[in-house]
Image 1 (cartoon, rainbow, N blue to C red):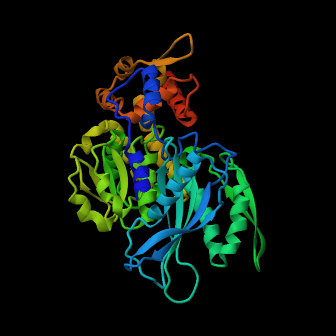
Image 2 (cartoon, rainbow, N blue to C red):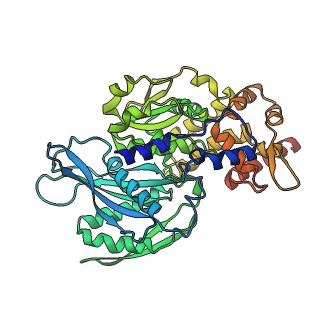
Image 3 (cartoon, rainbow, N blue to C red):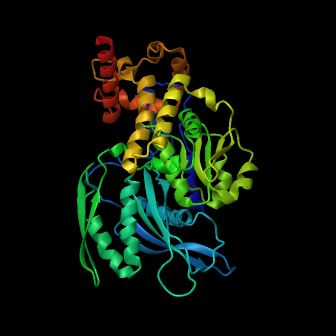
Length: 470
């Protein structure tokens, strides 16, 4: 449990910054105190997560329930591929911590299990943080193995540093199909996958896989064209919450408050939390981020720093009894907010809030939108435009020195905003970690770090110019 606590504490450690600092001071502080260096980023923004050509995954593990002497069931890893050898001492210790933490997150809902004859398979994910601050994502498929009589569910978990939920869900479909035949059929498929490079956006990789009595299959895995949307399914959020409530959640997230999501299904929790984090694009949630909190760690969640976590509905009373500070608690089962700060309606500029609400309501009433890609594009556009309109002028207020380093002029940036309501919001937003981290990256190079966001900024200014000229 100590090593699991280490993983969890890393997810709580954040650089609690109260404002902008000089870059040199930040670099110096990072060298002196490595624990303050930013963790990996949820969703699609981290360059570490999206380098084409690297391995699809690091491990495939099977986590099974083993009966203990006291009658409880404890999750244990019963299969691991590949087995890594010749690791350095530090690498071996890190691997041991990782492998000890995985079972708890594969069965986060406690030890009260019993053999069953029916069990609907479900897909969910979790995030673990390494000692160097990078994140590993666990893609899980919990299923009932084929057989007769009552038996226990097991979890197939793929550990990867790549964020692409849709792609790994398809991989898990293939794993589950092979599991119903034999465990032996899974190995060659995963070996073929491991030998294949992770494709670039819009590209496809083909895996050859032999299945007894079916012959050789060609499995095509295609990465979405829009890389900034490949780790999200906004439909999961829209099916459970009204556009009005989604904007309240967005307002809380954008000011980096504490957010707790409640649902019984692990898949609902992980999908909805990934979706909320993705609404912040081109910014990233830079605090505690745990899509499914294991039961034994519930008490640890109620810390004074910002967090975005998912908890199973069965623990609602325990959550409400916690001596936590102000938080937004969202019931994904009933589509309601259980507890709020009370000012969520006033955080976002009213004009932009109404425009986003209109856009989201238009999606709800548009029967022509069917595919998840269309839904993702439509929803993302509404929130990207919000940031284009409020902070899209940031690049004009970075002063560049002769040696190529940039310094953000925060005061001039805020003063340049003509709308009083927009300026009021931005003055709060510039104090957040997510904005500071975004600007720190922008100060490093004249080349925009988020090409899609920059494209939308350019389009917006061109449209404004066209309206003035016509």
